[in-house]
Image (cartoon, rainbow, N blue to C red; front, side, top):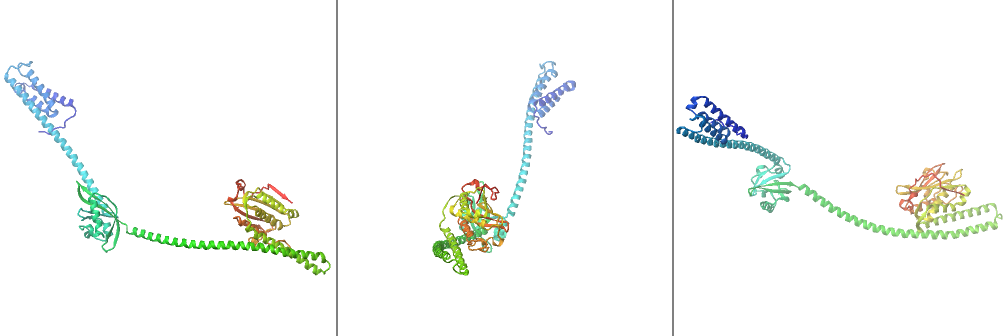
Length: 540
């Protein structure tokens, strides 16, 4: 039988082909009398077979019905009537219908069976293709897994449920120093230091537990011990333990480093504790020394004050008697005696000034009273105290608005008075011109006293703040050499510093600082240190 064509999904085509094939067979039979008389059902029977083969049972049955009706009406006498005269003709028609229907059903059944076989073949082919692809993918996956297993830089091994090593990679062999033959087929416990550990691992894995970072110790072939962390799980198939999948990570060096860190931390803690004890002892000694120094300084200040005070009393007596000697015997002695008496009076007066300044210097450390201090007011107080020398020298003092600070008022007044008096004293040929300003620079308040005096050479800029240091003879510029030392002690006592910048012949600029947090009025503090505007002036 020829190969069955695929079953079409269009019923009209199947029934249409059956109708056309049956019609053609009936027309040919009607045209050829030989066929009409002797082989009436030959071509119609072939049309029925074709209809059933191509279209299935429905088109085949339709074809049988058409042939039966057409034969009864056209071919079997009497013609043009469905009546049949000859019983044999009726029997032949009946046999044709029965046989044709049987053949149609048989053909349709075979066709359906062939269709199912065709579908099964297509499905089988598809399954074969899919299985081939799956096998190729599985082979590729297994190859990749094998490549990963062998090339992994971390130890990997498989162990059966009985503890026998089934597979191991190069990294683990290198870790322990064994060859594959020395490792495979052996019980994994042979490579563990503690047999109880591997028994616990296998027992927990058999209960389907997953091990994460399980600590263990492995023994190398050379006998040395390696600390490892094991991650492991079990491959199960149909509830059966197939093998473990273990990852072995060497942490020996990490543990050594951690132990070294712990040891160093312990040593550091011990050193810190020892150092803390040493510092506590040192602080205790320093506190004791500070207490002794404070007591000594207090005693020295009391001594200096008492000594200066006691020295002034004899000096006043000496000066008084020398002056009395001049009044009573002046001109009655020779000229040398008058000169000697004058020298003695002058020396006694200078000695009195020196002792007075020393007394003032000593008293600075013992009488500091911090209060809100308006620098404009204390500057004015200092200028009032300098009224005589300002009038004599023709000095002009100008100043910008100055801030209010937390300081000792009397010491600040003395500071301004000494600095301005110093500027007036060391004047040049021109009348003194002095300007005072203040502002903020970073974390400091900076006060500036600028003059047009004789200036100071660079090598003496620090020396002038030392007690009793003078740069000129007394007959040129009078004084004791203590004034700037007092200024330095006042400034440092308030947490600041003092310095001078000078150009010989062009004047000097004295700077001193106070901590910025000592300022009370922030508006004035924000101004530039080198403000050039003179808001107030005094001339005496």
